[in-house]
Length: 240
Image (tube, rainbow, N blue to C red; front, side, top):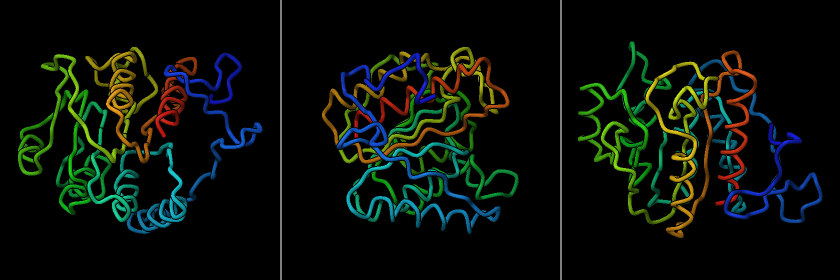
C-alpha cells in the first residue's frame, strides 16, 4: 500500500519521503524481511543483530510487523546507541505483563522486558483502555506515563529526544483499523494518532526509529488497515 496509486510520497507535514528505488538521492531503502526462527530467543537475537547492523552507520529504521514482541529486541539494539531513550507507545494494551499464561516472551510483555532491563529512560503510552490491576502495578513499578483514553484530555506529554515511536495499530478504534487480531472498541481516531506523531515534530525532538505492528491482513476490510499502516509508515519516515 506504500506504492498505492491513490497516495503520494508527501507527509501531512510537507516532507517528501520518496524511496531511493524511485530515484530519490536521499530516499529510504527497503532492507527486506528478516526470516525469523520459531524459537523466540533465537528470533530475538536475529532481530537484535539485524537492527544493530542496519543502524551501525547511523541510519534509522522504521520496522513493519509482526506482533509487538519485535519491539523488545529493536529497543535492545538502539539502547546501545541511545542511553536516554524515550518510547512513545500507541496501543489499546499496555503490554506490561510480567508473563502471560506462563510466557515471558509474549507480545503482551515486551515493555516489561524493556523497562526491567533499563533499555529506556521513559515510556509514554497513549490509547490504553485494557489495563488490568497487574499492569497498573507494573505502571507504578516502572514509572510509566500512561494516558488512558477514557480520561485523556487530548494533551501531550512534554518530550525530549531521542525518541522511539511504537504503534500497535489496535490502538486505533476498530472502525478505523479492523485488520487487527484483538479488536478493542473505544479507541483512538486516526486524526488523534496523527496528532500524537505530529506533536513530536512540533516539539522538535529527535526521532531515532519507529515500528508499526500487529496488522492482521486476514481480518482487514477492503485494505482499510493496510492503508492506515502505510500512512503511519510515511508519517514516521517524515520524522526521521
